[in-house]
Length: 120
Image 1: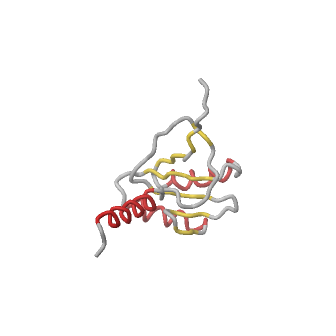
Image 2: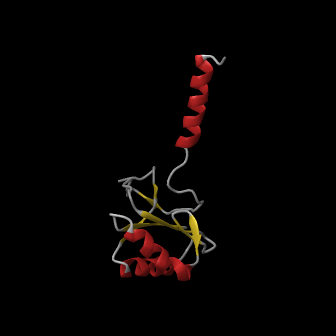
Image 3: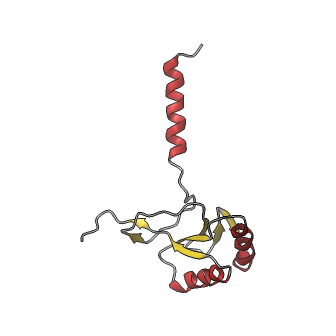
């Protein structure tokens, strides 16, 4: 029979492992910002440095992006698309995605990492 200490220890390990997973599951090097605000109930679009597109963690070809976003936004009360884009990509790639999102009547929000050493 397991002691109460063993059970608490296992629960602690489980919580530590699951708490480390955030909304961004794909490795993208984000630009930095001083704004810590995060959106909720939104659709995530991730673009890697290799121009691979993901919508809510699922790989999507760019030519299917409009249809996939249209289906997802129809199911959400919040019409916000958060763009996780590698900072090494040109602004032209962001404009293409923003154009698709705007045609669907949604708003684009750009994800950034919080810049800790910001001087005012």
